[in-house]
Image (cartoon, rainbow over all chains, first blue to last red; front, side, top):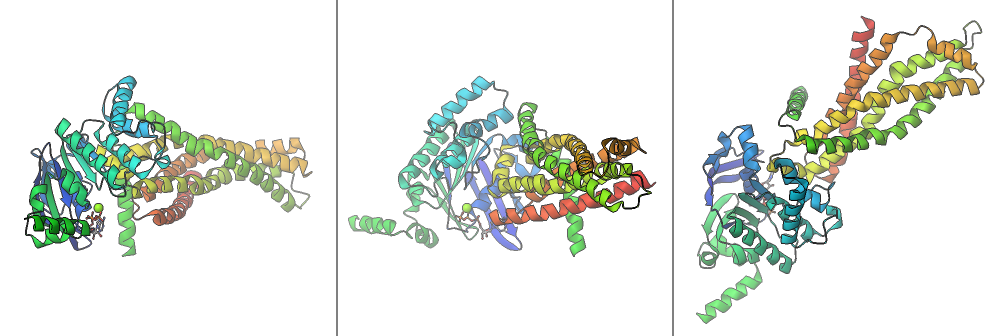
Length: 254
Length: 249
Ligand SMILES: Nc1ncnc2c1ncn2[C@@H]1O[C@H](COP(=O)(O)OP(=O)(O)OP(=O)(O)O)[C@@H](O)[C@H]1O
Ligand SMILES: [Mg+2]
């Protein structure tokens, strides 16, 4: 469980996070949603320690990040898997080497053990034919899957994904969403996902945190989000015509 | 304001230097990185360094010969002048400046690209000390930089010898007499002390500019240019200070 208490963050005098408090639960897919520029990435990067909050605390199963020593922080980070918005694969390495990287760096596994584990996770994300390709030689969707494979290869306790399906077609998006949810349940991971994709919200939104201009405007589950009266949320949810029509259809049925 | 900014940059640079040696990367991984850097930085530079040294050595010798018009000045001085200029300045200092352009912009742009594509964040998030991972292998690889400069000295003198002898300015034995005259072993020591210091500058200043850059692809290009300017300026200043300290006192 990750607890966020009153986290604030400003850049050049502009407050981007205006005091966020929430919890992200273990074994669940927790979603951070909100419009572009609402502060999702900044919140995620604050959880990761890439940004240091100006005030407030973040604790990982009781370990308060700001009170840890440098070594403790690095140990905590080996328990974290992260899928960046732009995948952030190492472009000097092949797919296989990218995925093997955390194992080579942080475990004492033999080459054979590493290969076995890498083959397993690469199969898990359905990339059987990409082992020896470089990131520049595969599509954006495949890069995302490599990034997911790299994030989960060392059995993380915490998994963070920044827009895992931005730029992907709806079908591939669902495959990736389901993959992340399965992995989360299977290994009891605390997963936090940034998204503005309503399909993901409907598929895997077990806990949803809605940000609006750096303020936590609403939180709840995917069942609750379609019932809420919160104007900001409905405005965001029904900004797409498709969902507007679904709601109208539902209203007619009732 | 400018001064404060420079001072804070300098402070940041020294903090970076300390950071490079913390939480070292596993040797089994580091070994591969070091070999890759030796290949990219050292081996890849040998061609251009050899080419430049050979021809500049030749030109130094010819220029000296053309300017020694007084028949009272012995010809072997052409060999002497070539040796002095190649060993003392041309090979250690000017090859380093050229490498600030070649290696330096390579280092800045490769680290800068990793910064803008979040690869450095990815390393940090995994718990890797990214400065150690990225910069330490470059420092180790550049311990071979004196070897490159050694080659530059040798080829520069060889070029001078060929230019002088085959240009018909002096005989081979006169040139060699010049090479051997008034030889001060400490000059070689001085040249290699400079080389080692320049190698450290070449590894760290371009890394600094790449690592702390902000922005996108366009800024990577700008950072490479700024990095080249600063690396050359620092090499020239260090050269002045070292020469004063080692030779003039
Ligand atoms: N490093 C930074 N320096 C200055 N301002 C920043 C920085 N990172 C983010 N911001 C600002 O913070 C605000 C929130 O940005 P953030 O990247 O968190 O948005 P987001 O919700 O992730 O949007 P998107 O859905 O487009 O990814 C933006 O106004 C952005 O300009
Ligand atoms: Mg974002």
